[in-house]
Image 1 (spheres, rainbow, N blue to C red):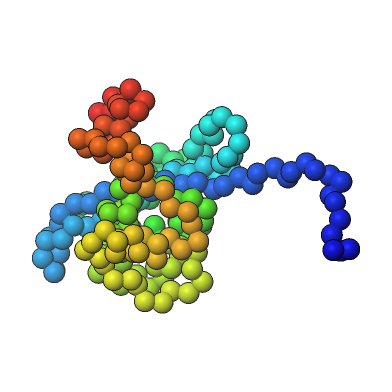
Image 2 (cartoon, one colour):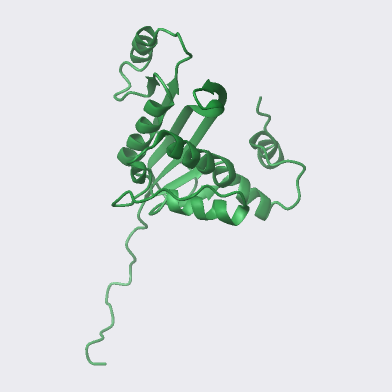
Amino acid sequence: PESVSVALDTSLPPTPTLHVCSLHIQTQLRQTPRGRQQEIVLASIVGIPRFSLEGKLSNKPSEGWTVVTVQHGSDISSLQSKAAEWTKGSGETRLSIKRNELELLLALVQKMHEMDPDVLLGHDMIRFTLDVLLQRFIVRGIKDWHYFSRRKASGRLPRPAGHSAGKDSVATELTVGRLLGDTERSAEEFMGRESTYTLSHLAQRVFHETWN
């Protein structure tokens, strides 16, 4: 067609960088008014704001944020002061201490919204991390859960799933607008049959390093 012309400049623009973050949570069995439940007691995010897809892997994490809850009866004011002293001069609050799981979840959702990663990585993200987060969002009634993703509005939380395909759907719902990377799922797919897919085993198997 006459409207089509040959581009004189054949050079391609540089590949855009990505904001990549990894997420890790820890749970603990605690006594609640509803009985003994696995509550999230720690959540940690490590990120690379401008991760380059070109060349060698030279990017190092430059963001780090962790939120924890205190044990019942602990002096939270004293712990918060120690956390502030520990992170003094870092330019941002890297350690946050909350009274309970509800405050932890609210802080996690807000931090994920602020960091707004393009790619979210983790180990056993689909079957554990995101599944547990969904259940705790429901129990704690987190209305602004959509800020964990790039949704514009909250809507109804997806239902927890007891089967693999359902957990995949849950992971998709909770991370709308972000690319999701699950290192355990990738290891199962590309490494073949292994006795276990824990991070310590994979580190030894792939990088010949031992993690304690």
